[in-house]
Length: 217
Figure 1 (cartoon, rainbow, N blue to C red):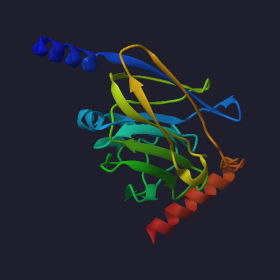
Figure 2: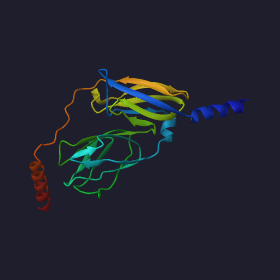
Figure 3: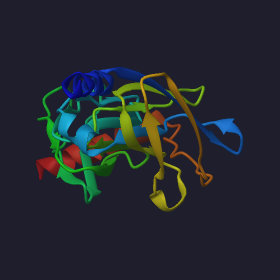
Figure 4: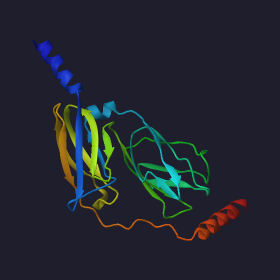
């Protein structure tokens, strides 16, 4: 009987549970919030993923990404100007030499944390990579909803957004028991103005020409 009970508990733990997270701020849905579930078992189940952050119209696409530790991220450049992607964030410091096309080497993100990306050529370009030690994660859409599946168990739910005050995620305990679970998280977001690219394309061309001339010296 004890053996059968143990098998039953293992089966329950292995059963995937749908989790729906609603993220709001001042009663309105929040886009681009990262939700993730953390526990010792989640960390043990984490595996590197495939991820791509493109550069289109002098913007990073997507603006917010979430990946597991050990993931190699490719940074293709789909623009007709060169970019120089970098980060000074403690979780991952790197600098890709000025390039165009798809030639840049992938970057491996080994440490959990938030990595802020920039471009040395185009100051208005910003993106965020959230590195987590859990395979159970998702990003909210325009409806403020994030959906994922995880085995039954008790987790720490973390929710982070680029505009969250003090840059600290909201955390709470959540227990999954096999049935679909719902949670609502309210964030305190600071009003932010998104960086705006110059309207004059000629300015961009002059900047790129200046960089090329500087390299040739």
